[in-house]
Image 1 (cartoon, rainbow, N blue to C red):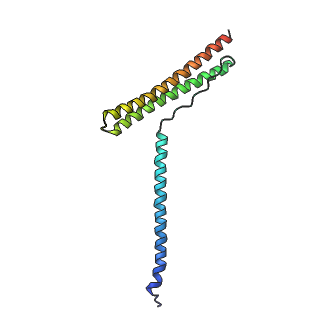
Image 2: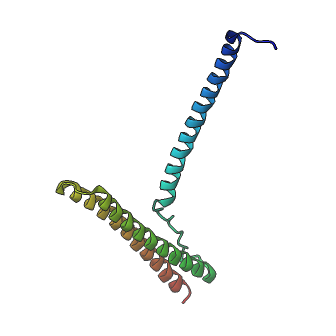
Image 3: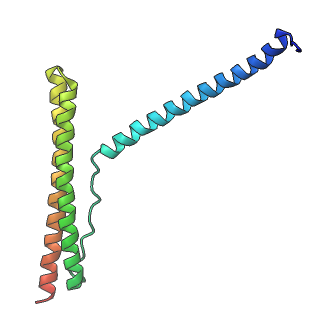
Length: 144
């Protein structure tokens, strides 16, 4: 039986161990990067998406089908905005619970920011509804 000196085995083993160590670090780095990406993706998926504003047809030149399609679009937009408002209310409630005990100034600032966000969305809904109503009146005036 041929015995190899121990020194011959060590460098090969060291190279193998170093390679495994690099692979292990790379796997940890890859796993960590994937984990962080998944967390950000999950937050994005759970975020409240502001609906895209609907295009309102021009009542002075639109056909009846255009106006009906516009009405459906406005109704869909309004429903989406209602979902958005519900979502931001739930998010704010969860955020306030997650904060725990905070000073009154911080609570007031959060409440003011939420109210501005909520009121801006409601104002946008009112503007779209009013714009559509103006175009409906223009359509009816044209077709009398």
